[in-house]
Length: 82
Ligand SMILES: [Zn+2]
Image 1 (cartoon, rainbow, N blue to C red):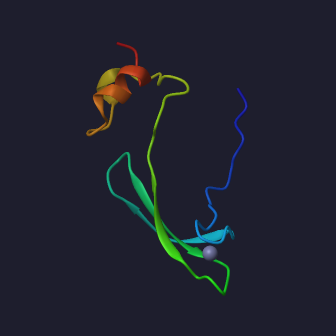
Image 2 (tube, helix red, strand yellow):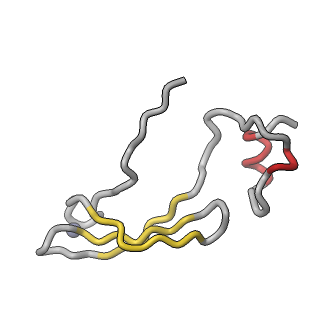
């Protein structure tokens, strides 16, 4: 399978201009918060976005015991073999 890399930037929710990430905090092993700054000098909105897994595309090949602490059970049931 080929993987394509994407920049994980985002656009300003107010004016739509591309934003710069200015801070990132790993809240839990599964959840990361990124602080963005709008590059539009007339806007300069700052906001926090959350990055977390929402669904499984391909199950993990690791045994269930390898799951990180705090991974939701419902997510694991789809992500790993029983
Ligand atoms: Zn903006």
